[in-house]
Length: 298
Image (tube, rainbow, N blue to C red; front, side):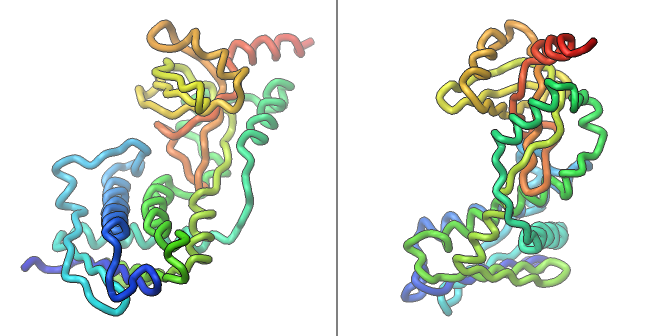
């Protein structure tokens, strides 16, 4: 048997684990997302700039983060996972660090993205705020970004496990997640605590306006969204449009017809953002900005 370098224990109690049994859907969801959390943590440690939104595991990565399932225990329903890979010890520490950051988040503010976009757009059109180039955006720090994108990427997977506890059919069930790397961290959740965890992970705001250049790969009118390929790094981002009139400005640029230049705001989630391929909120075409500035200049 392999030497155990990392251990994870997930302990469900309450209505969800009646008669020491767990529904297959619940068990499957739990196993998938705890493995995903370790995969995201591994990729965050692997890349110099941390994990990015569309980063995927390669064949050679699997052994570095793979968890094995041991026999379950009674006492509610206890899932034991372990790994013999030496590298999973620091991966486990990275997962624990991300979860701890969410639990330490105490601010509870509801962000209205559309209102923020409208406010920043007014500032830009009145020459109060000047959009920055993508090059400056890539290299300069935004004070609104207070943590690594990896923290949110890992915590999001743990939050998926906690949807089990937040569901109506779970009643007053609880879950305890123990993660052992170089040390052991125990995280216990009831419905109220899991709701607070979700609010922290889901917290959204937008960054400073940035000038983007590239091409539109697709548009979805029903959901007011599109896919944008950034000419600066050839990475794809989701493009969100906040109203129908702005959406109608974009079809002429769809496909390989020509390059689009626009001002947008990067999405900040849980105080973090992916500068290379994170979501972008469309503000205006760059040509609209140039016309507005020219009209207000003496």
